[in-house]
Image (cartoon, rainbow, N blue to C red; front, side, top):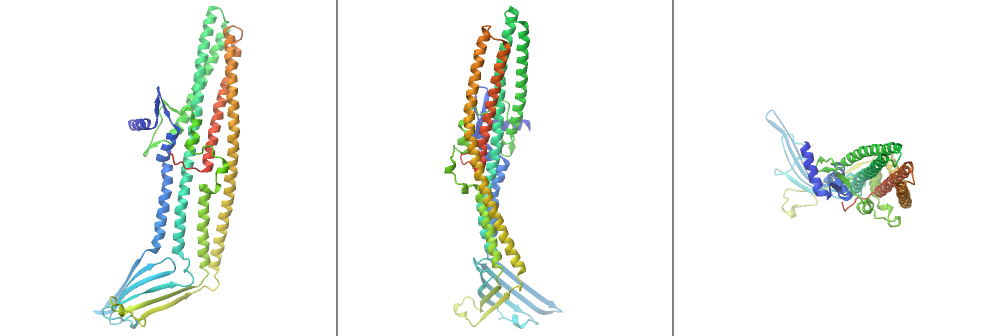
Length: 466
């Protein structure tokens, strides 16, 4: 099993990453591309489309032609009481109209007179119409309309699910970038502390520096090593979290230790997430997948409301059939030979129907309130994120200037220390301040990137370029 995972990782590495010296760079865009293609939740999101198509197929089944055959026979003490055959072919149409054709053949000693037909049987063809309840809308019409809306809604639901898993994957990647950069910062300053310790040690042996300076230099070096080890553990944890989103086909992949994140992420994140510094004025909130899904929900509930309102009408069904012994001869159809009838049904108080209609109206109102509330929340959330991005842009400029100034101070202090005009304590203090500033810069970058991911999530974008 271990070899299989390593082989899978080898395939992933060769298809995803560009090799640079002894490390392998996991590109952010390719990473999200594999998440979208292979992650189980992304695949689950695609199932919603199939569910919508299956629902539509089921609803269309209400208009499928039907064949019905009734056959009854009774025989007792070698006497045939009756033998009844009734076959019917029905074609439901869009409105409350049903086309019918049938064949009837009956015989027997005790046959009911109304069932007596010619010896070769009797054919019929006609129509059944609901003239009140069920004419303009009925259960099968409502089911098909709602299924069509549901199919469209599943596309919006799919986009929301895909967007969410890509958002979570992006956050994990950004945390990995932060942990990697922190590790690199500590690794660089470990080397500085080691060189300084060795230099102070040589100077102390030569009598140019006090012996106590070697102790301070050694403590500083050990602290840097300790911080580096802690940063390595943090990096391993974040790397494993990133691995949770990496799959090849149906196999999870664990990143190797020499895999590193993209270096200049800020240049590619907008293009990858397809936000591209989109101004709010160019974004139409009504196109948000969440609002689209809620709109379709409202429309489906309104269809239910129309159906419930139609139930207040009486049920009146008219049926008329031509009768003939010879269906192949057109002249055999005679309006005088027919079978017809009227069925009427109407509850006196309509309490059930009126209650269903009120419930349907309340559901529509509830869905509309939810739509309005969600629309306002999304708009305000997007406005807030744009304000945060603007603020983080200014903060990033400030922190870069601060890091630059601290670096200048450290360089100057090290130069003074080399001339014997400064102390090791001040050099370490300057370096500690620079480390804190660099870590703050990395943390600020992480917040900036996560805010971009929040914007991506708030806009519910399903990137087409991945």
